Length: 208
Image (tube, rainbow, N blue to C red):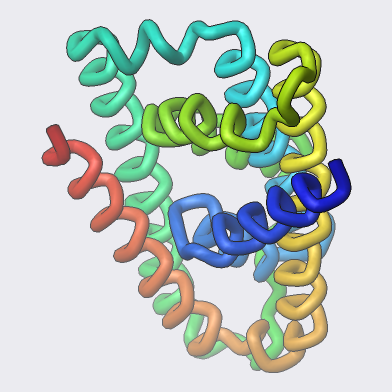
């Protein structure tokens, strides 16, 4: 059991280390504040746990088997990514108009619910996250263990582990806040993250 758990945590580390839309959103919101970044992490990991439970119940098999259902989720996910990317680029454009303001300008704080909802929505709108959970979790169910509770437990461990992992990202961004809060630096980072989100949205939309 211990060796299985260690292998599972190692796999979780590799998954978390792979850059994706959630990583971009977490870093982007962490630029506002550690609170915003951490709540985005909690939202994202709620989505991870939800997909894990859905996979345990076997419902993601329906998504994998139905091209229509997958395509609907794929388009919804692409729209979510494009909207987030466009909002980020718009914020960067507005910030450009404020270039004359003093260095150290602080972005207005988002509500906690807004940050949490963003992380949750981005994860739940990604059909690949659902399919991945279905293929990933069963590999680590110990032999002879009841599959449903074991997969739910693994999903919970996965989500808690990633809270700690992405929490390090939030902490690191917070430590660099003085530098990252400079208007031109913040604007450049928003341009990059907005462009990445748009590109990921376009890729998901075109990925059959």
